[in-house]
View (cartoon, rainbow, N blue to C red):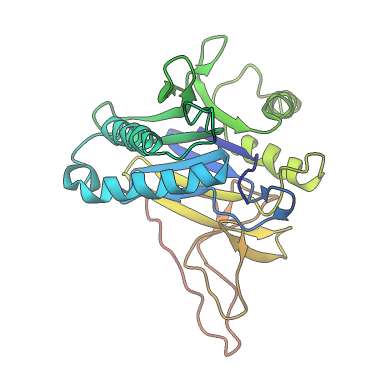
Length: 293
């Protein structure tokens, strides 16, 4: 299985006076078949950033694994003494060095060409005390991976920062605008969990064969901690899914559990009680903005 398209998003969420960075993705790989259990959001050895991808998995997985290891091998980055902009630079250096090592190309092909994969990299930039998002992508004009900062939405709305990569991004953006308009949030300022709701609905309506499986969700907080979430799927009564994979009968994901139809809420409890009524395993997120009523 070499290729897939996806819908991957990252945005700055505003909750009162608090902000957090949210990543969301579908879970489908598709290359002549569908496989709905693929991790597309990745934690890193440093806890203040996440990365996700859209595109060819034969490129994406090796690149993400090696850049993650490179951060882990570099104490100043692993310990967050260096800002995430340094980690972004490490990612690009690793991506380009790995691509230069492709060899034994088909006869007549001089370069490896477009790898057909894009990444969203983001986290909390402690030097500037703000969240940052970058798109990492291949640029044919320089035959290298490079980066593009994600800018606020047009019209001067500095509170709305959103990255979208993958399949049907134009439709996803149109749906998002319509959802915000229906709730009286235009012009307004900032996002809550509306981008997740758009992703959820596009998975459910099955209008795009490349987008499917349970939604994946991760967050980065301003206290420089990242957190993955389990998502009950296909609704609140469903089995918890983590990074697209359903919990096995004996598993209790040590993750907060998200209701896909009330994504602004989440339980501190990781899973349902066990057969002998053990206490729920809980993940305490003391400073995280949440609602539990």
